[in-house]
Image (cartoon, rainbow, N blue to C red; front, side, top):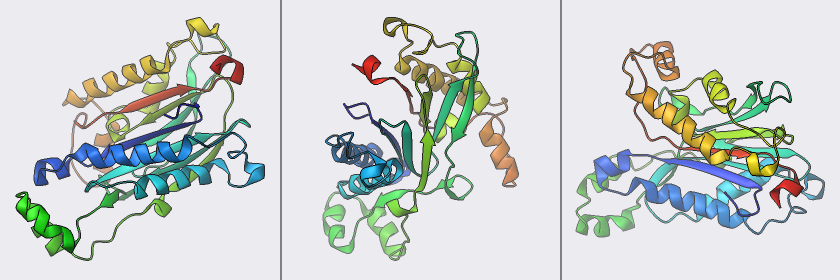
Length: 278
């Protein structure tokens, strides 16, 4: 999240780097998001104005591109970046199987629930094989890796010298209109493989938003994110529950029951007026 409150991002590092090759799976994802943040932190509202150049989704794509260029650690990760301008346009660049939900109250009433106005599309080459940004070792890196005892990684790279990589340009772009009181929910596949959108709307419905209370009584977005993440975690441990992942597995001709154990990350944010932000 950028300090100016106009951008958010989420990434999901590929755990196989850790358990198979002994490489920190989080480092690449952290560098990717830090690079995105560095690109956006100095952007002024005027620069994000679509009448003066790029629209918000193009800014989000630029951030993803620059974040990728900033990576130095070997690894792979999905990536989602969202950028908001003061005109109420939210631009999103999404590569992989993380997702963003735009939720809005059914009525301006604290007792009414949320409905989902928009959801980004997950990108997968095949079932459970999402698009990913990757920084892979090159031949000149092999001697140093062998000295570090990373023989398995070197052998894997030698067997697949012409790997085709996904790149930031492969990201799906979305432009959405938002308004004060809307709630953004960003989550990795660990969230959306275990919880249905309707369940997330129900969890968010217990929150007090900016249109229902003065600023000191608004439910912190971080509290909503924690509730969603905890619910997803508990579902992931349930071996008999119905879950989105089990349904998708069945559609792919596979058998799976219950939730899916996975890394779970959720970020939420309220859309506020400039006066409330200050």
